[in-house]
Length: 127
Image (cartoon, rainbow, N blue to C red):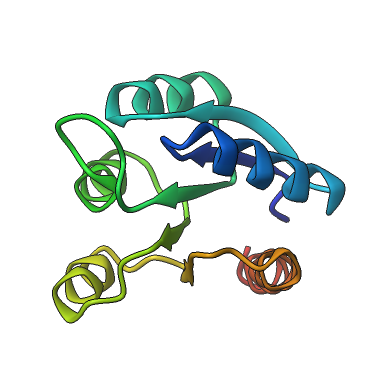
């Protein structure tokens, strides 16, 4: 099974639009865009994405790492984190939820596309 449908969880509208454009142009399909924990949970249930591209620093009461903890208990959807924070404490917390990868901001378009292609290949092999 390959990765086709991707949910974007990013609270910055400009970055959200940038990610959406890159993902769609790379041949994947953006099935939804969420800005916070509540929107993410609703969209996951509604759209059943194959992958979530999630910012660690989301707006609202729960950040991306806390949201990933909840999603890991409820669903088995791979998560690709994006973040502007590379400090040890954030990275340690992020790795606890076993993301499929982490991309650092500023986001390089070609790096993101390459990462998505690699994730798709790995996911296809294991399914």
